[in-house]
Image (cartoon, rainbow, N blue to C red; front, side, top):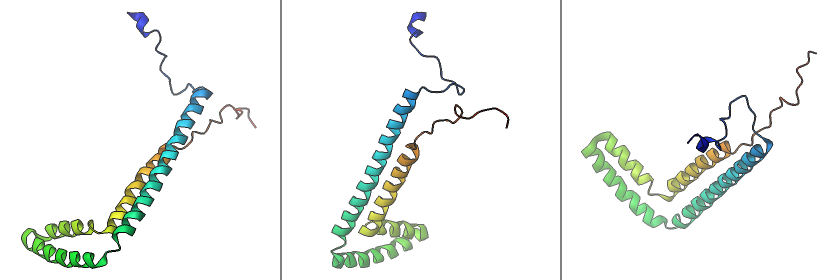
Length: 135
């Protein structure tokens, strides 16, 4: 029964250092995470640009929708008060291509920033190169 735990390595403490192979593998994974972040950012920018470019062409239909949305927003404010009007305005704003593209850019930027933050390379400690001798 106790032999089953024989292959489990001892817990790594804060005072012990990782081996160079572990640091190389970790830096390789972090580089891959940075590549994923760059890919997410590029796909987000390209898709937001395409969405805006393809949907912004038909402005006559958008003007008709805006006039109808204004009437619906007024009715919503009368029925549900100010919070209902704000909710209706937000809903109508998210139907337009500009805010949709901006939302795509912001969300992909936040995800990419998280990937870049988590993918920062680990600097090797300077403890081995520094000397403790008094000056």
